[in-house]
Image (tube, rainbow, N blue to C red; front, side, top):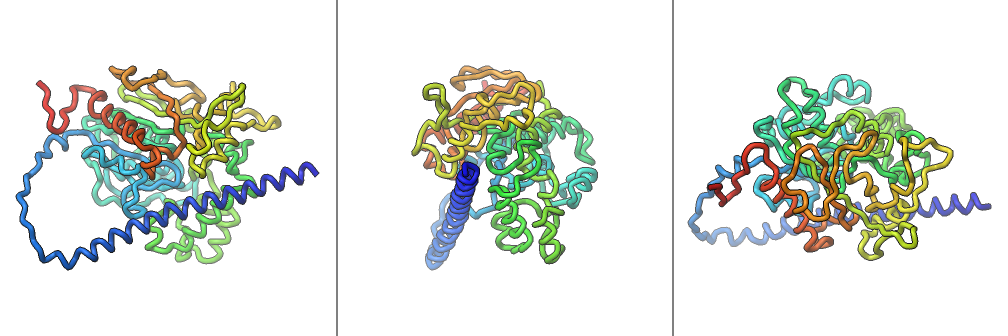
Length: 461
């Protein structure tokens, strides 16, 4: 009888979680569509007045100084999107407008950290994305992907390094990319090295995995496979059908990033769809998608090959929405946590690793993983910890870490949930400006290898 009650509660939680996530997805999509329709209507209504010409003297801007500044690249997280997707909607809620040299690449929203790192390289340098022959064969997808006829920063090299800002899984993508640069892993680019990355700022970055993956359906035994009935299985079915239908205008609006798996109905037919749904082929038949990389075991596997480098500056903002009451970790707020995340904040704060399953790493303790922001555990966001802890320094105020030293992870704990600083800037209010202003100011004024950068309208004497 008790087992039936537990099963009923788990099924109810699955239904509620599924509805909440679908409603939020519909909200984001409809908001983007409504914004585009409103913009199109305004343009249409303003056309009759186009015959009225007002001549205004245009003062040419001196962009030579701006062009000398290294760009700041904002890398989105899971289910994210870059510039050009979802119409005029901004994943970073317009933060990219705070600086004149900001790039917002559109990477696969559910593809693996490895694949996204490859895509990010070619987005910047230009050319056709090469996922690597060995990797592509092992994962069952095409070796080559999207073509960037013109790179967004083709001069990128050690003398022209880049600032990266990664949200959630985006921060780990940059770490993998930097390791690839150090390992000279891009064919035809033998001069790459880790110094191509000037700084990495992590905003709720996924460095050490998250216990939420197990709540959503990943098996805690291996961190690779999914439970038969879970939220991720519903997501898997929806994504496969979406990609199989291959509706051009819809995929141009939003894309999960699995085009290189070639599961369109035009290529695999009905039986190909059945094969994917049964788990015999496609992205979910291998570990080459994002969730296995976000388990604690998956992050440990990734981190075992990743280094922090002595000439790169690292800073991370770790978020949390929990507090302790009489020694028990609970959500720190009811109305301050997004409805999409509240249930997960509560569940993650009470997470217990199954006693009959071996610990994900030596020294694992449940209590270390209870503080969270609804998507990631706070311990995962500070700095790389497993299997080896990287040099780090906790700071209460941004000014405490100046002058910055490269090769050290400076981290700060911020009271916020996982999506507090993205999509909807009104939720964060003044905190939104404070955190992004500090990020951009650090990139422009406190992070440099040779001489301080000359900012627009500013000169050094």
